[in-house]
Image 1 (tube, rainbow, N blue to C red):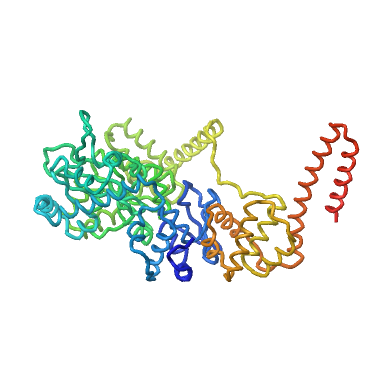
Image 2: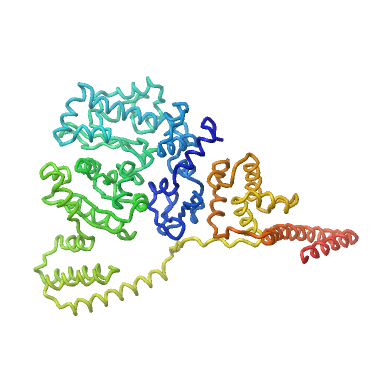
Length: 606
């Protein structure tokens, strides 16, 4: 299974890293007891069911069943093959491995279809080509000067691999064709467009500044092109949605910002990728943005796995304010610690930084962000004439309703006092109104929940296994920790097998693992196993609470449960045979079978 990377090198890499550090770059983990818990990166959830064991160097999700070690985690999360995942971890551990460079070159293309490989390779080629045109050629000089006038530095152009597409109608088509890329696949990738009147193709992006869109795995999957000519429309042209690119699941700069979000335990959500790049120039490296779409549940889940704290920094015009309110509501519903940074004078971050400098942006905009409740108090004033008695009372009613939803009583008092001071209303009256609103909302929500047709999705309960299955799981857990116990179990089974096929397969592989001279090490054994489902089963078993010591009597009791189940199955089988014999009026055979059943039941009693 390990191929060209020597087994001892794989073990060295695996022993040089801590799975908590590896997974911690992708998932916000919190320690609970001996293990770490977070939101599973492999399925959407709001309650953490993803567990990581530093002691055993394994992970397991009690929700979806995913499980394995650091290598298999990287394989699953980044879509890499075994070799590529080992190479990535070797780089993290600063371990040099002598291996064919082609493996490293094509690491990004593992575990995807051949067609998707072509798409990824084409995007990577064009990203480098567009960037080369911008920074190294005469054709890209106007675009480069335009960017520098807009405040872009050479460093930011390099970091975000900004490029330029030629004004030619078919240069990209010819380049891709020359490199052997099938044009029909390139059209599906959104890089070129097929003409309606014939079978020819033309470039999608022409004479535009090109911004590569990178997904969470670090793969370039799309582009956004900005016009140089202000009279040309549209101002921004994005790749269409493809097999690689889905706007609802891609956050701009998420791949580069991930480590900074984890370190600072906060993400800053901007309205567009230009704002992210501008903020990066101001040394704000935890900025991310949606790709021209409203915030989605998929976006929220990605952010939540890294942090539960977000600052929204959108433009302060009417569209930006409305978008900030909608995004804020979604994040608030998912219980984020949420703040809103307001841009003054209708400026966007790019304009503000150019006018006032990076330090002022960090301090007076990001640093002066307000709570979501304070923002809502501003938001609900928009369009209202508060000097009008009716509109003023309506505004107060709305704000009291918002305050009633706050969980912290100190916060509730704080904002009620603001209302009292602004509109000269007694705190007693406001508190009474707030309590009435709170109980009215509670009654309404309770009624809606009782009468809703929607199913409430709860965190799945831990499976309660039958006695024989629990016995097999505990035997496997003890065998994973002790070679002698593994061979003792083999002897006690005396030629019999486990009842669960997966358990028997694990048992067989484990004996082979030990016979090859390996010592007990669950993480190493997971690498040894060729089957993902078996790895998941082991990860689940290893998360069971279990005493380290086991007596001979306890082992024999477990074996007894395993064999007893086999006898019970045999009895059921014999009863069917007996019934069939009686139906056929073969009384002699039915009597003989009855005697066999009696003998089997006696062995159960003993």
